[in-house]
Length: 481
Image (cartoon, rainbow, N blue to C red):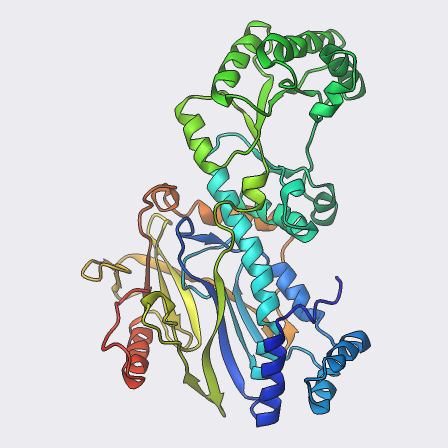
């Protein structure tokens, strides 16, 4: 991995230099990384933790980095000298990749010196924000299909890294393969792809193009049928080739539609393939598809088996960013944590103070029912009833009597030493599938999803109210976040 130590904003380095000059660089602090609600982001699928861990482990200021910072002429020699031996020495807790989280829940928590915590903010946000955004978009898309989805977005990704790590994240969200060969090599992802329209146009006729392709790839023959005329040329020519393949002992894969009225064309093509004796030939569709188009095609009973989705997946259209933030939650005076919170006239921007964790509450049927953001030193006694309030309409509440809980964050680093080993991507994918199956479809639906309850524990709620009152803020807050 290339040196990403300078993948930070200048003001982070300026504050680090300032902390050193004012004598508070080594004060320990707690920071939370979480995202705020935005339309279309009622929940998120965590991704990018493996790359975040790699980033932390490889932090170092080499000669080229120090020479560049020195050339800016704004940093003290004491600061630059301190950077020579920089190494992350703190603690980190995070939700596993594939975990479903909700707005305001700490995806990742850092406890270390102000000096260290400030440097890593930008890169952690960059890594976690991007992959979590794409994994979330992938889930929204794949949950609306009955067939598999292939990620096809490399050509439209916003740069090579976005294409590579977006492909990885899309697999965590539910895609089955990618067209990205480098991502396939790096992460062991299944790669898929067939031909472009240019292949068909390079031969004297469409039939010649199909026959040449079938001769080269008889075991993997999937033909693109919309270069000229889908129903009068493309599908009939594909059927001709399929008959030739069958005569030679091969089974064709199917056809791909990349334009036109996908519902109409797929239904007509399905009839033609069936009548020709190829009921098992699959219909693959691509072309500016997203979850909303998928819903529409489902209503129209489109006969599509597999999907290739590119632009709107790899760019997470129409959500250009996750909106993740990294906020100070407390500063230590010796061994005592002094909780901190940002106060705003906008309730959504008021942060939650203290060193926190998340508990997921499960009903006896094993389905997720609510989350509780709590202080880390709290113990939840599952032998006693637990009352959770609606996050907005606080007069609504639910009391659990038979339930279990699971703490979402796990220890990643302790005193700078990595304690968590990232699973293989195939295991992350399996974990992600298990976790999303814990949620009723009503929580994940695209339109008017049922509100999943995320509440503050009594102790955290009281602490937050106390700080608001002490700072001259609101007299009280809603029970939920």
